[in-house]
Amino acid sequence: MILSDISIQRPVLATMMSLALVLFGVISYNRLSVREFPDIDPPIVSVSTILPGANPRVVESAVTDILEEELATLEGLRTLTSVSGEQSSNITLEFTLDRDIEVSAQDVREKVARVRNRLPREVLEPVVAKQDADAQPFYWLALSGQGYSLLQLSDIADRIVKTRLQTIAGVGRAFIAGERRYSMRIWLSPTALAARGLTVQDVEEAIRSRNVEIPSGRIESSQREFTVRSLGELKTPAQFADITVANQNGSLVKLRDLARV
Image (cartoon, rainbow, N blue to C red; front, top):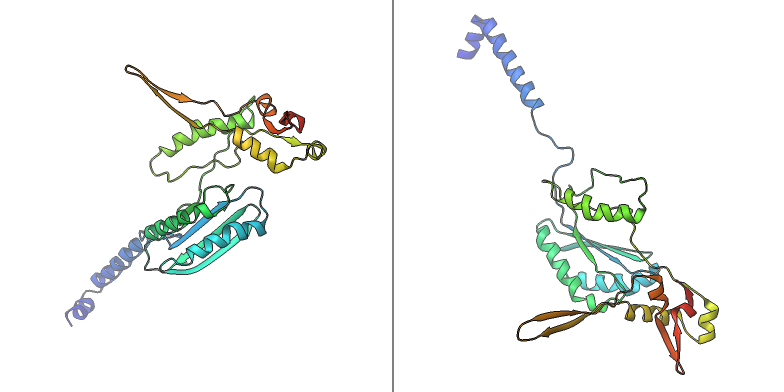
């Protein structure tokens, strides 16, 4: 009863002690660190795959079903959901909370690599990513310049701006949205194809087989050593137009005879 006796005998001291406790409580409450979005890494891994030119039904049968069949055998898998859209396949895998996110992502990469040769040849490399609560973009930069085309701005953003942003401390990832890449457009003539008995696949195969740069080996001597490079990558419309699509009875069918480049 010493505290109560002191409080009765010295009411001013008791009042000051109460105010001090209230003051310390208010200060501690204001300095309490509370995050609106806690730093949480849920055990969720996504697999994104692009198959150019394919409709959702083809994507589902040729890509999604094959990946699902292999990924369904993963240890600790809780749920597996997939969405097959125009040219794209997205698979989301949720694991149990006792699974480490890094180990789960590595297991998914190994499973995807195992069935890579069963996917169509035209499919782009599947992208395996883990869901990160802090991996959302929070800052956007817009590039513009008088006298610069979209291709030039995209090249500047890729070679200069993106490289410097990635070296900043604390930056996890920098990516370019809305960029433009150099491409060659070819307008095929259905009449010319039908007259020569050719198909779009024939033209596509001819372009793919001739527009490629492959290793050509090395030349070694007693004093020198050279690396041989074959310049097989086409860059100008004239080079693409000169591609030989077919040989019909000794007559070469060029791409210029079938399309406008």
